[in-house]
Image (cartoon, rainbow, N blue to C red; front, side):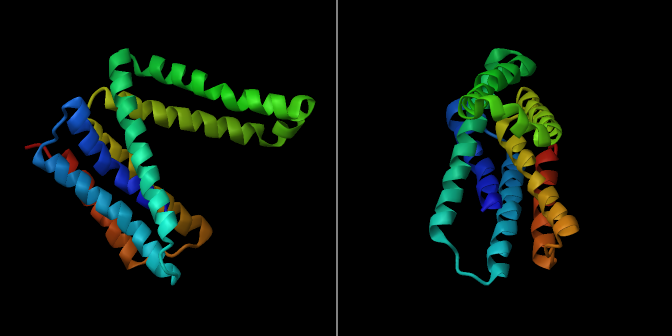
Length: 196
């Protein structure tokens, strides 16, 4: 489901950016977004096929709805970071405002036990948080310098890295269909980077 959600988002961002931002990518970029998205969704479809189970239609619809939500927030962030004039300031305010709710709830819910509950996970949690904020900040910075649709597609290509990690560390299969889907995504990225 994850590759479907992430793979469909760049296609929707392409439409939203055209309608609301006035960004109309050239033929190469449009083809690149479409091909990369096809590769990403191909990873998911192979996973469904390889499981031997029938598709779970409610889950597929939820994945598509998630892709739509990702596309909307990616577009809103692209417009917001450009209007703010600073990607660092934008991500800082975003993390401060969004980041207060969960710690406030945790403090309310666990009170005196909170520090003890957090201690075993603090180092990994802080590392994960730092990596997440850095990655998100880089995406926002890129959105100030390039069209939203190709940035969205390049961002989602991290699914290939996730599939490789699954193969190396969790012994998941990465057979010919997944290699073909990953290759399709790389071709899409090449098309997006093509300069006419």
